[in-house]
Amino acid sequence: MTGFRVLKGGILSLIQDTGRLGFQHLGVTRGGPLDANSAYWANRLLDNPVDAAVIEITAGGLELESRTQTMVAITGGDLNLTVNDVPQVPWRSFWVRQGDRLKFSTPRYGFRAYLAVSGGFQTPLVLGSRATVMRDQLGGVAGDGKPLQAGDELPCGHLQHEPLSRQIPQNYLPQWSQSVVLQVIPGYQQHYFSKAAWQTFWQQEYTLSSDSNRQGARLQGAAIAAPEGKFLSEGVSYGAIQVPPDGQPIIMLEDRQTLGGYPKLGNILPLDGFNLAQCAPGAKVRFQPILLAEAQQQMRRYLRFFGL
Image 1 (cartoon, rainbow, N blue to C red):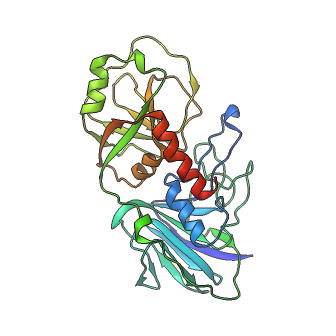
Image 2 (tube, one colour):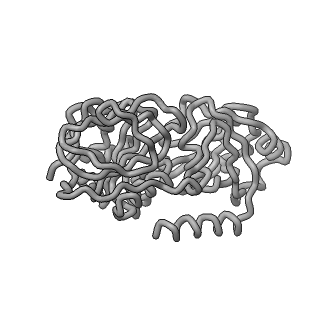
Image 3 (cartoon, rainbow, N blue to C red):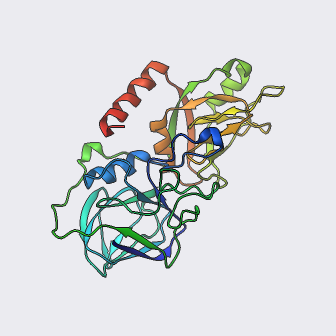
């Protein structure tokens, strides 16, 4: 098995696949790519299984040297990738040879890029997944949850012959900006919030905080009045909108804790969460309601498209 050598780990570069399923009752977080749509497109460009491991590159800085010849695909945000100092267009696949150097710089648009390789990166499986979850110390190059760092070796396959390059059709490319509207399905705790709290939530604009991470997107803005009293801790779903006592909402993401006791307004549509993953701190966020049936229809189309 050959692969890639990490020259610089960048700001935050993580091995991710579809995640660690079936262990949340033990307190183990799923993990997985924050912008799953981009990650799955990267694998589709290479005819990889949808759960093949990719690299999630946050805000750039990653540098790799190829120790093999293979096809790679780059999707997600445009982090000014160059190969041997030649700029590369994202959302396509291309051939790399032994000795080629891949370098990701600062974002031109978006915030996270996804690099796939033919056959996927063959890092160790931990509880059935290669996904890196730093908080749980699981996954990654050594299985200990650490992000990529200089000197790491990323195993992958070797291709004898160069296949045709592919590019995502223009009409499938997402349109991102640093101002997003997240569609929300109100949850079963919605009636604990006052009418004034809901008016604040729907009418105000929030700012994505620099304190955000893969566990949760922290928002800053007009305080939402949290319900009084204590709530039992319960399982926390992806996209749940928690309201702590300070009234600043937190959207729970892939590396969220498995249990939480803050009251919840509801859940964002996961497809909108992928757009949120491409927002840098300082982005503007607003909310609007969506009917459960419409949300289910959109999710069914997405899951069916990728065979999930």
